[in-house]
Image 1 (cartoon, rainbow, N blue to C red):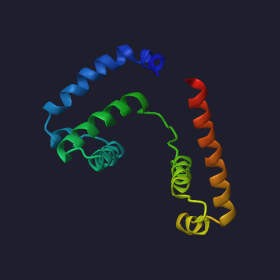
Image 2 (cartoon, rainbow, N blue to C red; image 1 turned 45 degrees about the vertical axis):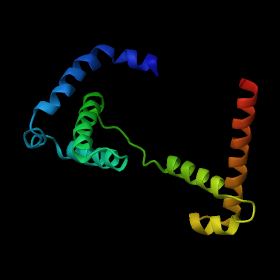
Image 3 (cartoon, rainbow, N blue to C red; image 1 turned 180 degrees about the vertical axis):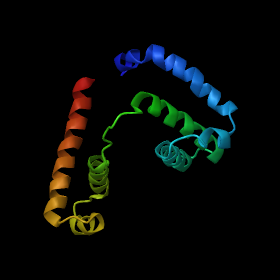
Image 4 (tube, rainbow, N blue to C red; image 1 turned 135 degrees about the vertical axis):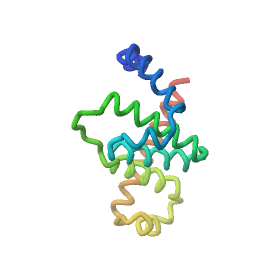
Length: 141
């Protein structure tokens, strides 16, 4: 990660100075000129920051900064943003593992919209991952 940050060091420093000035510009004046897609990104980011416990005004200010930084590095390009289905499936699988007690496979299958064999496969895969985490911790010490 640090090596990647070096690639943006000079540009990011000057961008940081601009980002720090965002708080000095009235919100209506600032966002009136933003493209619709960027304004929507601000809304999504602000909503998630607020859900995480940040005060609404601070969440909106931080979301504007994050959107500006993303627009700086990725703006003007056509790029694909994955839907996050793999991440959602991984989180679902971890939830199944956390809720699994050895006798509730049918309930878990219904709850998560999977077949019983699919749920067994999830449990088996999560068991393998848990075993790997434990063994890695044991051998890393």
